[in-house]
Length: 74
Image (cartoon, rainbow, N blue to C red):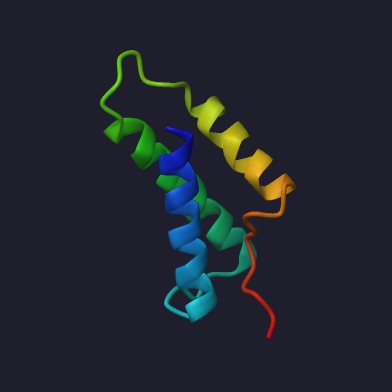
């Protein structure tokens, strides 16, 4: 479950850095939260994890410097 979240966040961040996503930081943050909702719905586990668990993991990843909500600066 955590691996799926991390993989999705890394893909989104890659698209942001490549310019495929033109979101502001606030818009990109929202996009990441929506992605977490999609992951939660798609998980084939019962019971599904609470959304707050997935969000907490995302913020943990941000705190560790593995994800950000703004485009990388050259």
